[in-house]
Length: 242
Ligand code: NAP
View 1 (cartoon, rainbow, N blue to C red):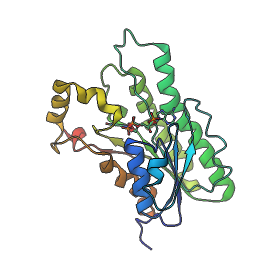
View 2: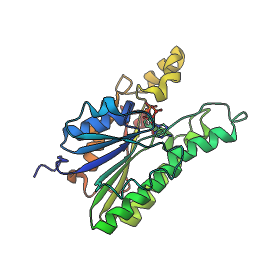
View 3: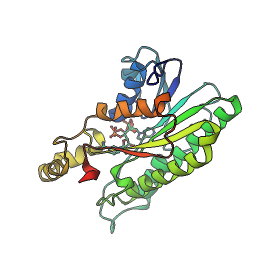
């Protein structure tokens, strides 16, 4: 058996309509998985790129919205990719911007993972969870307080869930993407000085593309990574080594 294959597996990817989530969904399909492309926006364009896929409406602004998802599907892989960012000086930051980001980026991830694991344990099925963390799981960032709090928290619960579930057959890990050209970084890239300053620090000499993250997600979902638990794997062109 090819340890990098996802043949026979079903993967659910949140935020699969765009950016990193779309690239992960496509890569998992290429690796042989059936992919449930979940999003608050329609995922039909992503589904069309994959041999075996279906779309699922899932708006995680309500962090408990995914509770019923695992009852109707036997899902082996959960990719918690959906995430939002709000930018403002910390002196001006609003409660709304705090709560919205924490709900999607952290609370929804925990309770979706809980529902996934409960279903896996009840069915006697093994599972893999891949969380999409951030460099701001390690660094402080600027003007993104709730995003930084949520991504530090995400790194923490990745390790906590790995500790609780590794011996029970559900592996939990995270990817910390570097600076990737998606909607998430549109504001940064629109500022030429900021874009260049970031570029100057990336040893690889370029911003990342969503596809740079996708194959790492396949690896962390595949049997090849079966002894990796609780890792926060930077895929950042060398940023954290600098
Ligand atoms: P993106 O293109 O903005 O993708 C974010 C995804 O999350 C979109 O599919 C978005 O859907 C979805 N989403 C947002 N709110 C949602 C909700 N309430 N319910 C369901 N889905 C929701 O940016 P991206 O860079 O691909 O982001 C993907 C993940 O990577 C995020 O967790 C982000 O924090 C993380 N990340 C990105 C970078 C980077 O440099 N780009 C770096 C580190 C980490 P809509 O299209 O409908 O908004």
